[in-house]
Length: 389
Image (tube, rainbow, N blue to C red; front, side, top):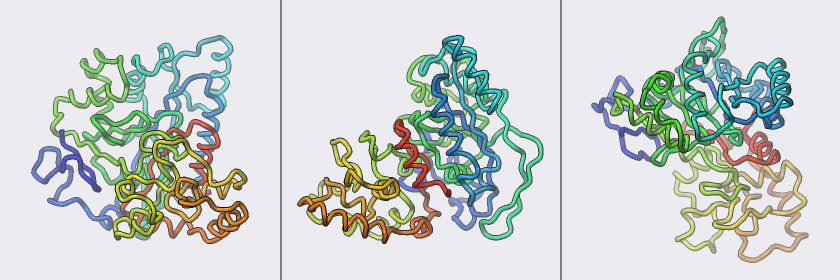
């Protein structure tokens, strides 16, 4: 299968391959790409009827007011929640009221489930019904867009996301804006795109909804099934698999596989400049340095820097390689006395980088999603780290 990754390709896609998506013989530069207008994205968040509190949290997090610096990028992004049939009369009544209030819930005609056909039903509904605003964009400066929307159109891309996956919406849009409009399969890849959050071009969603193979193979791990459906495409050799694994990861407090601190473009720049050695404590064994996280210890549960951090200090401590994150106990060769620790925490927070400084080098990418944000506090930490407001 062809694969396209602008960082470390899983299998490099060369010019001349049937799946090569660009007109020329090279991937467009960031200067070329900044002149592309924003794209339309339909996001399906798969959840259960009983998860009303988390739906409200997500609505607040994705409200345009939280992303004041990226209004044009979000102009044609539509998130909706997909649930199975409510399991009781009380749930049914509550969902009906929620639909009347927000209008963003789709009740699929099936019992609630994760791996027995719900994702296929989501794609089937989306292929027939998904719409995003039809927007016209005007660029006034290199990256300054204004827009006007009138009517609706099918989306360019469709994303499936879990309830505990916080999507950094401007970065989701920016990454997809740069990618092929057809025959695209995008996410955090192994042998398949993990179910926390993955995307398809709309033509692929239409294919899945009409595929006899997909309809006959609807039960099993949903993310693996989606990869099987993609592999069964009649032009599978032309489908481009795009991995953004560097920018898709688990919340630092979750202590799961591929869990680490929140990352910004300036960290990637420092690694590219071979300054990684200066980021980590000198006592760390070289064999561990390649997988060391300054926020999340290896093979152990998360331990905070201190028990009395403010919320803002806590968020700062969860950003990979910051001075405050380096005060996590697993980074310390010798424990720091409490009075000195308090002083160092306050100093590290006061001297923290600005958002603008952390976003230097954004052309190379930034965090796209943070998964395993199951606790509300974890979700709010991710929002505070990445949202504009």
